[in-house]
Length: 466
Image (cartoon, rainbow, N blue to C red; front, side, top):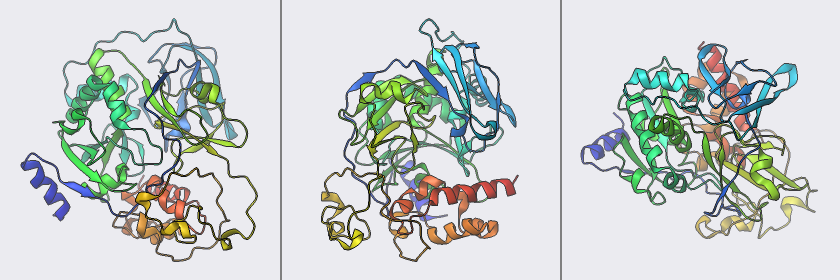
């Protein structure tokens, strides 16, 4: 048995939790952290986007012009129709948005204030089977994902563990304590429910220094893990790797704190409530703050008067793993952050990297600024400029400095590029997800889309395994 697992078991017997220190990583200090002021946003439109879900083949259940209530099924998984996505708000289906080859991209609902969530009978008999049935029938099941592959969890599987991560170390990430203090009862109920659903295999991850919520720190639901260190210590993949590593055939379920709260709200009150608190952050905003609104709210409604002009990029999620959106789009299902930063479409500077840059951000010590310890570096307003073009891979040894897994990152990337399934399995493909390579992509001197490479590798392995 690995020493890390032995230490966790020993700490659990003593009624305490060991601090797991992550040494490889990088904290990117960006300007524009959301201030703890809450803006209430009543969205005019919301949308669910099938493209947010890995491996989903959706079957549409509504059409344009249909009137829907909170909880009305909009689409389901064609391969398992028990898994459904439901309307987070009552109103009218305004648009069924399609892309190339009629790919279903979004189901847009225009909200009507008169539409309220119907009353349901809360599930009082909290058995595993009853909880699973309630989550499936009320459209809450997609809030639970699984590793490997990062897909929606299969209801027929029995996971080795269930992870809830209660902190986020990504750039400009929201303070999860702030979310917890707004929904204490729902959070506690959600943890109770997931503890039963997991068969007592619930793992709750907190930050050793930053997490201050008494509800989280004194939680008796499952095993409490304390983590410290730079990003990606807040990634669920890192937490799983350090406490419950995944081998071939193993399955681990996970979800974030916002999803736990939504699940808890239903089991607490018997009413579907898809309210969410999002962080609106980034150097492109004058007043970064938090916004209370509904799941899948439109970008235009969330940003309101602060909707950026040309020269700014809006990102659903964080700057490392999020996707670029416009004011016509909607925040993604699993994101809890909307970021606005300067666009990087300016011309390259004269002499480029040869020019001494005392104020330029650098990790590989190309510029003198890289010699300043990260602990005392000031916050910076980075843009999206890549400062170079894609080029052949060279072995620099930089990836290992920000990649905390006991895996050879460059070798795994190359195995994914050539599509060698056996080599990918031997190098630990089941333990990772694209977000785990986000920092590698950020510091990559070859400017390669590493997250896409890892996703393609995972999809190849998933198809090979049926």
